[in-house]
Image (tube, rainbow, N blue to C red; front, side, top):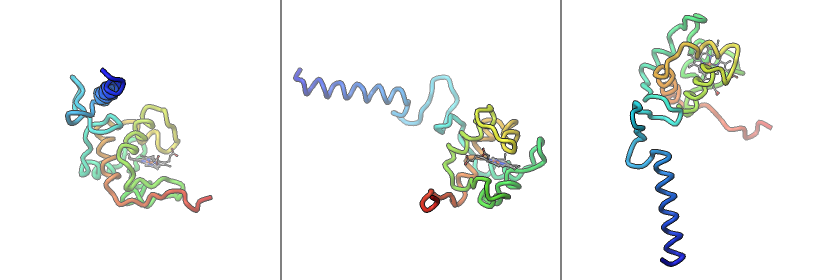
Length: 143
Ligand code: HEC
């Protein structure tokens, strides 16, 4: 084997290892024994319609719905300091909700909103808000 062949061989091996680690090859990231996970946030597949219903439902903890604070499509927040959710990456939204739920991210208004949510509800809410028109912007001109 020449040096070049060895390098090719090593490259191929590391690609194979990376594929195996990501479970990304061969279609669909099926972990053995685990139910199907669709997102990088490790959540089940989100359903937009179920998410829309959930987003409008008054929560037991506060009597408020997501839409009450984040506004129609998640794009008309009650207060200008509240984040817009419409068109945000669903995985980002799902991850944020998981973080509020498990206490890694804390906020007086948001933490209890996420408390009782199941993984499926989080995935649905994330899919719904992620599917709305985006008004999120970068920070160009902000400084
Ligand atoms: C009482 C008002 C209120 C309600 C009700 C509410 N939110 Fe929030 N939400 C906020 C505020 C304020 C923030 C910003 C908190 C922070 O800075 O961490 C926020 C942040 C978020 C974020 C993080 C966004 C980002 O850009 O990082 C997500 C996702 C989110 N809310 C989703 C929801 C969902 C889904 C619901 C319904 C289950 C909901 N919110 C209900 C006020 C609310």
